[in-house]
Structure formats: structure tokens, C-alpha cells
Length: 538
Image (cartoon, rainbow, N blue to C red; front, top):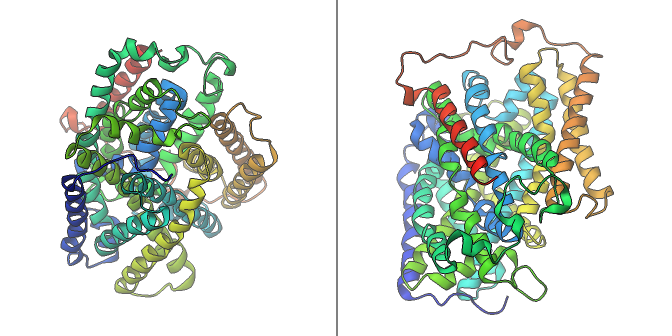
């Protein structure tokens, strides 16, 4: 791209500069409060539920969510909302109600550490290495998205933009660790809402409301379920079974219940109830994020019919095009800052998760077992530097994909889908053995790669459909191999599985608490709202 979309004023640049100074300042303020490894990597497990909930949501509200979901909305319409209303909310509620008691009560520091306790060291190693690889690949998405904004805003080269974005994240995460990241994520959450909310309001008004917008778009763009009876009836090229099994079950639960990027925020909560409420409270906000990201995609498709077509702008530019159209000087700076905030929160989330897994599950586990906390914090900071350097390289991989959403879901089908199969059996089937879990996970990851490279692109109808079905079959293979190997190998005795397996773990109860503090009640409210949204846009 040689021409800039934006003609930003001095005020716009000043707003962005103030934001950068502010987030770096948070890192400096928190730096001197970090005394132990748990302080640096898990915020001392001292953060209130409402803060961890916003950080939980904001860590996911990165480049994939803002730029990618707007692009997907322009490409597929309201079908993209499946990534939220079936592809996130049920799994978030399940995490809060059923999985957090395992995670939090065992005092684990990472998801791979749970696999070590439930299965064996080999399963932990596989997950630690695969997760570290996935996080540096996905953090490249956020870097690429931030660079794209700088490039379109002031015409900088992609490389210059990527390096500047990386340096800002490096400074504030390196100084303040997870605590700095969490408090910046809360700030970024409010910035994203205030900075982007005007776009759907102005766009819908410009197009004559919902009906006026839909008159310019394919009929399937306005529905969730009405056109998924067969794959040929919708732009996504997927039927309801693929959505339910591939996205709603495997990809969704694989990400929201086992990905350490989001689980790490729950482990920072101050007690078990706060940890359980973290994803449940976040789900109440998550249900309305489509207003900020998917509706603008539909608006862009209605206003710019050439988007995504040969010679036209990329789907990834759906939101930047609307910023250019609707935001005057000053307000443009706020909108751009909101987008940059979302990308930085996503990248910082990946970096902090990578750092913890590298330090505890690779470096401490296999390279240096007996160092003190000061040494591990120093190693964590070096891991941040190395992780960001690798992310700079992976940003160019993200550039090669036509949609960053397709790229992200491809990575999830490789790593998260098999991991979910391993976790599901490990937590709810006490007969699953250490070597069953290990070989199931190995075979699931390998099968996902083979399905990607051996089955021709377009076989499933679209990139999104391919990701859904690949995730499903990788999950099935993981489960089958785990079950078969478990019946051939020795299981752990029940005494070693207490606190790790459902049925051998005490469930927390909150009868004495007010209704708005009880995880079960809040989850029930979220479920009712979820059903209503699906019926409304059927």
C-alpha cells in the first residue's frame, strides 16, 4: 500500500503519543512492586474479579477481534457472530463453572503444569513447546495489525511500523510483567469501547438503519442459523453441523478452557470465587462485542461494494476505511488509539503467556531447576525480548494470509483442538493414563498438520469451513488414541488424582453469598441472554 488512508492532524498524533507514554508509565510504576516470581508471572494472585474479568476479555480483544472480526463481518456477514455466541460464551461459562476449580485449587502456574500433574512430564513438554510456538505465531498477528495501521496512517514502511509497535509492548511488559499487562488491558478495554462505538452508530444512520444496510447485502448476511442448513446457502460455505462441532465445541472449548493466554488472567484472581467469576462476568461483556466489530464489517460491505474483490481494498481494511470516512481530526486520534490499544493488548497477552510457559515449563523444568526467584524474573524478561523478536518475524507470515481470522483459526485447529481432547478426558475420565494423554496429544497435533497440508484448499468450501472440520477431526483422533492407549497402559491411583479429576475434587459452594457474586447464578443469566440473541437473529 503506497497511499495513506488517513490525514491525521497534530491533535491525533498527540492523543496517540499520550497513550504510549501512559502505558509505558504503568510499567515503570509497577516495576518496583514485583518481589517474587508469582508477583511477576501471576500478579501475586491478588487481583479483584472485575479487573481480571476485563483483562480476560481485553487480552482476547486484540488484532484478531477488532481487525479480523470486522474483516470477517464484511466477508461473511452476521455468520461471524457464531465466533462469539456459540464459539465463545458456552466455553467461557464452562471454564468458570467446571474447570477453574481444578486450575485454581491446584495452585498451578500454567496450563502445561496441570498436564504434568494429571498425566506426566512428557505431556507437559509437548504442550509447553507447542503453546510457546503458537503464542509467538499469534502475537505476530497483533504486530502486523498495528503495523498496518501505522502504514495506512502516515505511510511508514511495514518494517518500521512493526519495530516501533514491538518496542512499546516490550518496554511496558518487560518492566511490569503480568500486572502491568492486566492494568493496561483494563485501560485498553475502555479505550476500545469509547473509541469505536461511534462507528456502528454513524454507519447505521448513514445507511438508513438495519433494514437499509441489509438491502445492500446478500440475504444470508443478516442471519445466524436460517441459511446454514446446507453449506451452499451461505457465504461462509459451512453447514450447521460444522459450526456446532468444529467451532461451537472443539475450537471454542479448545481456546477458552485450555489456552494459557486467557487462563493466566483467571489465575491472577484473589480467590477461588473471583477466579470462577472472571470468565463468567467477561462473557456478559463478550456477547455485545459484535456491535463494535462485526456490525462495522457489514457497514463496510454496504458502503464499499469493491471491498475484498480484485483490485479493491482488502477485507482487513474494513474498519480503517470506516475510521477514515466518519472520524474528523481529534476523534480520528481517539479511534486510532482504540485500535492500537486492542492490538497491544492482544500482543501483550501472548507475550506474558509465552514468558510464563517458557520460564516455568521449559527453562525451570529442564534447564535450571534450582535458581531463585530473582533469576527466574530476569529470565522472564529476557524471554519477553526473545519472544517479541520472534514475533517480528511471524508478523510477515500473518501478512501472507488474505484474512488474519483464517490464519488464527488455522493455528487453533493445529494446537488447541487436540489439547482440548486431552484435557476433556483428563479432567472427566479418571481412567485416562499418563501415556494415553501424551500419545493422544501428539497424534492430534500431527493429524491436524497432515489434514492441512494433504487436503487441497477449497475441499471444505472455504478457509473457515476447513478450519472447523480440521479441528473436529483432530479432536476425534486425539480422543480415540487417548482411549486406546489408556486401556493398554497403567493409570494413576485415585490418591494421585485428587484435585485433578472431576469426582475426586471438592466443588466450591457459595450459598451464603449474594446472587450477583455466585458463579452459578451469573452463568444462568448469561445463558438466557445468549439464547435470546440467537433467536433474535435466527
